[in-house]
Structure formats: structure tokens, C-alpha cells
Length: 201
Ligand code: ITT
Image 1 (cartoon, rainbow, N blue to C red):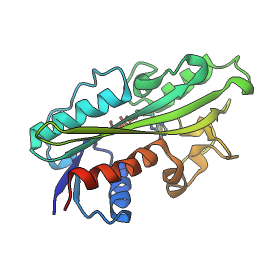
Image 2: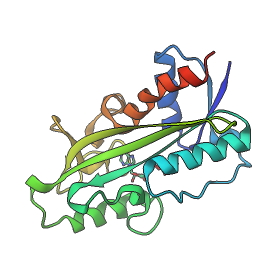
Image 3: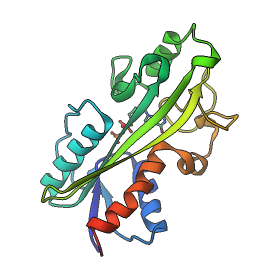
């Protein structure tokens, strides 16, 4: 069985990709970066989601000698010309401070009415092989931004993004409901034929 490593320490992402690969009949041994604790974190110096996903996937493939998958994602707000974008995790200054990031964004959009609160989550997922072969695919979840956070599921900006056609925010959806429509779910599912092509079992 081919071992495949996913460049994240987020257990939820590993579970999601494992389920998507299994649904597609691909039974690779998928492990997270935690399985290789000595590997240093990669600086995300790219200026697009795709560049950052590729940087992380190549670094991990080189360090482990295994095929590596990496994703990079964020929230892109229309009226902010796509920001926070690649800066989503540290929009308020400190990496991963979800509450501060969300509050700053809501304050910035305080005067913007419902007609102009369009936004999307974007995700790029990359597969890199130790020989340098690379592929990258993308997924989006389109919606609009609420004025106040609602819901307790998920993370990040989930409490303020209401997907198109939904009356609930992402933070009110179950994990299964969110994975079925999410940017990351779409990108991971788009990776299935790529895994099939490059890692035929
Ligand atoms: P890694 O450890 O895998 O890098 P991360 O959470 O730091 O995970 P991501 O690239 O997945 O990094 O996401 C970057 C930020 O974008 C994240 O901190 C959130 O603020 C936002 N974001 C991405 N996907 C999201 C989602 O599904 N729901 C809410 N916010 C999301």
C-alpha cells in the first residue's frame, strides 16, 4: 500500500481526506505531518493559495521521500478585493487567533450592506512526488457574510459565512454537511483523479 503524507497537524483534515480517498476506492496509507515530528514547518512565502500548497507539498515530499499532499485555504471578500485571502489565518496579526481575525473583519465591513457582502472560501490542494512531479487543484465555497457570528461548529470564519442557497452559516452545518459543499471538500475530491493518475496502486 502506498503511503501518502498530508502536510497538516489538523486531525480533521486527515479524517476528511482519508474518507474522500476511501469513497473513491483508493486505500492509501494516509498519515499526517505528526508522523514525522522532526520535519520543520515550511514558511508560506507564496502569494497565492496554489503557490503555498505546492511549497508545502514539495518540502514534505523532499523531506520524507513520500508522495505529499498539502492544502492552503482562506476567505476572500469581494469588497476587499479578495482579502484576507492568503493572510486569513493572521489577519488581526497573530497566527491562528480566529476570534480576533473574525472581529477585525466584521469591524472593517461594518458599513457595508447585505448587497455587497459577497465572499468565498478558497482552497488549493497540491500533490508533489519526491521526483518533483506536481499537480494542484482548487475548490471554492461561495456565500455572503453575516453582520454577527452565528453557530459553534467549524472554525475560523465559519460563523459569518452563509453559503449560497443556505439559511444557516457554515458554523451551523454539521461537519458532513459542510464537507459536502466546502472549498476543501471540493479541492480534495478534485485530487482523487490526480492521486489515481500519479499513484496507481
Ligand atoms: P494547517 O495547519 O493545515 O495549515 P490552518 O487552519 O492553519 O491549517 P488553512 O490554510 O486551512 O490553515 O486556513 C487558513 C485560514 O483560513 C484559517 O485559519 C481560517 O481563518 C481560514 N479558513 C480556511 N478554511 C476555513 C474554513 O473551512 N472555515 C473557516 N475558516 C477557514
